[in-house]
Length: 143
Image (cartoon, rainbow, N blue to C red):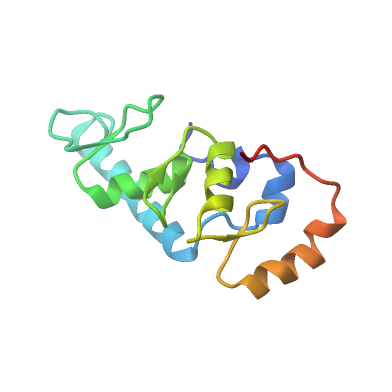
């Protein structure tokens, strides 16, 4: 996946419109810092920042060969580029598996229609009444 992709963009136009920002401002700052560091590393040594045997933290996703010197950088990468739950520190094969996890986990307060996370049940309920209850149902495969 290219570096300009965001989780909301990968999930389709309907979910992207409902989700708004897919990650917090703090996560966005970490991602920007991470990408700036990658660019400067690449410029200094003339090779991609994922190259080299000294990378101790490898991305666990099968379709990704990235490696990082710091666990924080790996986590930032997974938040930006993959289906990764930062709350539970779990990796998922696709968006559907991630959505099912959020629906079944007691750590998440999630809209059952679009998968947006909330800090309170009242926030989720207000969102559902104002936004998602007016949309045609999206079939979910939970189970």
